[in-house]
Length: 315
Image (cartoon, rainbow, N blue to C red):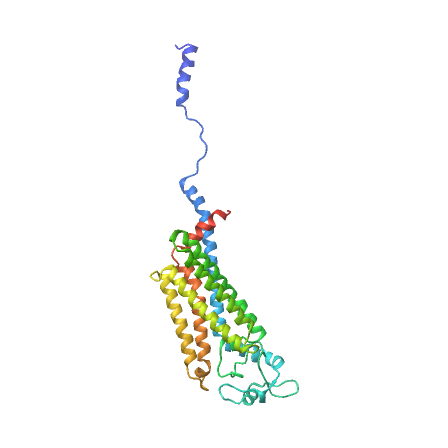
């Protein structure tokens, strides 16, 4: 038989071997899922930014290519021409040599007094689609030279321009810390973008109706600044990369389209009247595609966005 002291010694020896109560530990799968949650939220936000930039850029491109249709829709289908267009039809000269009186008769453009009227300079929601009034052919500048047209152009191009700043010059500067890009190169990229933005603003402020000469100068300068800027961006991201090649191709297509439209012979035919407008649409669309190209295909852009945004992420 064991006495009390022996039993007490035995219990003391066995005590360390008895199972102790442990705190609950999450399975590895749960821990991994929780660590992954902020990253997934951040990826969703970045994908939303990509979608927003792609959508707004596409909307702007659609606006450019649908200018004649929108002019017809608002001025004639919705009837704004009857209230906003007050120029006597016999005073309007068409670029294609067509009689505007006949156009007004066909479209039923009569004012309250029954007189045939047309959309002169600054008349209508957008400039007249039926013929190039007071000029030799159509252009983007022609269609948007009304107050609503200029406002729509500024509003719809705002988001693509913001994309050029944030995902163009701004993102390249952020990536420069890891890529070793020289500061002077980035300053040049930023400077050309400032020049583009400045002359683009002057282009919107000085319409063909109010200041045709200054408008033409502004258009030329903002196009030159844009081409130099895009080429500088392509050089900075390296033209051998996918993004660099896409940007170079976009610039080449845009310059070729505007050049071809400028030299295309003017004639009464549809293409003879719209060739320059089409070239401008392709050229400006190519330029505004640079920011989406950088965001979707730029080397290191996705990783840099994740790293920069992670410290500010709250779950």
